[in-house]
Amino acid sequence: MAMSKILKFVKYAFKNHPIITNSLVYGTLFVGAEFSQQTVSKKVLNKESFHYDHHMITYFGILGVAVFAPVYHYWYRWLDRKFVGTSAKIVVQKLLLDQFLMTPQILIVFYVAMSIMERKKDIFEECREKIIPTFKTSCMFWLPAQSINFMLIPPPFRVVYVGTCSFAWVNILCWLKRQEY
Image (cartoon, rainbow, N blue to C red; front, side, top):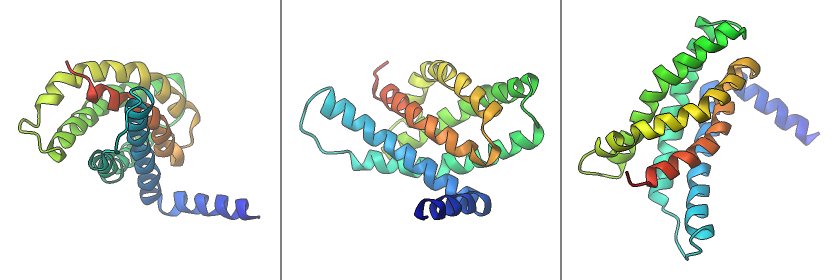
């Protein structure tokens, strides 16, 4: 009985308040990815005593809740209205637009916004150094993931699906961000 009430509430939230629901779910997954990345990279791999970098976790939360989730909400809504259906032609159009139009902008926003929040002197330096390797990696990850999204996931759940995939992707992104080029 309690589970049916939860499912009913979730359905209500996604139907009646999709941007808020998507923002909370996506933001939580985005923060969770950074939290897990810190845990794995510092505690598991290096076996060192450490404190979580709460500033970095907060920065990921801000980007996840206030920036990326709303952008994705409106982006997928536009894509689904402009390109209706799940035929191969439609899916390829959505994939190409998503990967080659939206993704570069998202990656630029990620690196520049993180640099601003980290108060770096040159807010574009990290972006210049890491954008190409990050974009190449994103193509390997997101093209298959988005194929599933555009073929199988119902539109109201696209941001949550992307958020779930982003949990894995942000772990990759966190690792890329920590690399020296």
